[in-house]
Length: 236
Ligand SMILES: Nc1ncnc2c1ncn2[C@@H]1O[C@H](COP(=O)(O)OP(=O)(O)OP(=O)(O)O)[C@@H](O)[C@H]1O
Image 1 (cartoon, helix red, strand yellow):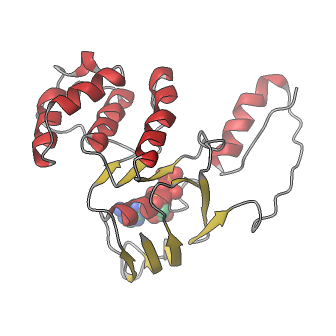
Image 2 (image 1 turned 90 degrees about the vertical axis):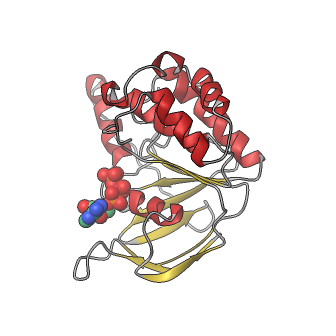
């Protein structure tokens, strides 16, 4: 799949969110997308998924089956989780059992009879994740999937991502917390100033700076730095 000279803005006179972006996604690759709040990560993911079209440039060779889990799953739908997943399974021409099995794997079986409107943010996000995986995706796009998830699902997610990739699917994950920073073989893209930089260690030189803070502030400062797209590591 390839993005060629892709530019996008939300309105004719609005600012360019992405400008002249060229990218290649290989089958079986895993890409982590980072960047500050509002940098354009979700917009890039929506362009990749085909939810919005470029204003200029083109997206070619998108795999036919795209699984997309949005940052905020829309719960304002009058269905139970089971009915929603069964409906999505029919739309994707797969057995409804696929939704039940995924719900079990992600510790969401107890949610099946609940109305979508009653779900917490984390539970809704799980349902969004399950629907994106119902049919084996050739392209899986997860927008901030780690943000609201419980520990069990957080731990399961890299495994699921690895399975999709080893089946030849391409996986793109936006994650301002850098949860996939040590995922084996993952590519890292940084969205900033309306462009996308492929960080591969050779083309982007890094500097390490030490930031010294009080113990009680450490978590908060680290979270802020990660929210701004920096990689962090703790020393003793
Ligand atoms: N539907 C929309 N209409 C108009 N502007 C939008 C829309 N969605 C996003 N934007 C603007 O486009 C820019 C990029 O937003 P986007 O959501 O892609 O960034 P992001 O990196 O995903 O941010 P975050 O980490 O906060 O989700 C921001 O300035 C945002 O305000």
